[in-house]
Image (tube, rainbow, N blue to C red):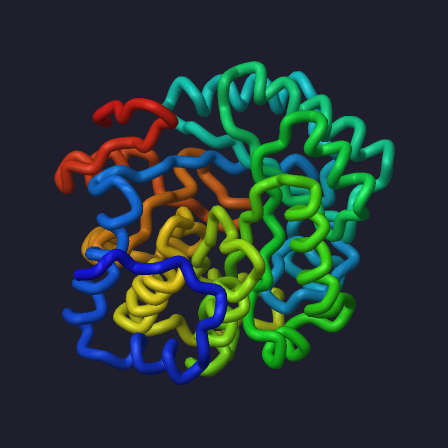
Length: 325
């Protein structure tokens, strides 16, 4: 398999041709691309903490924290800095190499940002990578976060531009793309992906990956989420994505963005060990690990991850070394 070039000019027809090829051929191609650009049998583990729960003013149809959705999720204030640092210490002891923070805001106020900056500095002092998602950022806010040492900023596009308008009306796709640009210009790594299973078509899914892959730089991390249909949201009755279709999307993300971390994120609790294994073969090399919840939905128990990784001979991905689980 030739060394896959880094491209930013993917067409829909190219993406569809790749996606539609025989399943085994697609996985073989994705695994070859993966090994050409990234270490084999190594997975990065990230731990996510929800530092501000509920009360989000956006009307996103998938979200358990939106004020528009009757999910019963309580509103909680911004977590104390000390408690966040302590939780990050525990995550590092359990093998995490990146610690992610999430807050249910449309965008941070200056006062809230000051608190988050203190969290970032404290987590960096532990030797962990840092990632945060706070909503829409202004240019000066991104620059402040960069100065604090932030490694990654998460801002998912979620789906195609066409489908986004059907699942979120209080913000625009252009807003999402603008924040990605602001983050890149500040010199912060971009973490951006999407959610599969929100009633979108295959075309929507491919267009999402095309939009990400055709950015001026590929997102350094690409979370691929499987919708958790939360009771009380407009998507509570959405049927799950077919397992093989989901794996195809992971493979396509790997081929189109060869050097990115492709992360199995939300909804992993719904995936069997065999499905996750096929996702790793398809090029996934990052997971959200530890903690009973990802934001407000369940996550896989750490013991289950450890057991699967031991069976597969997968090691945690560290900056310089890989420690076997």
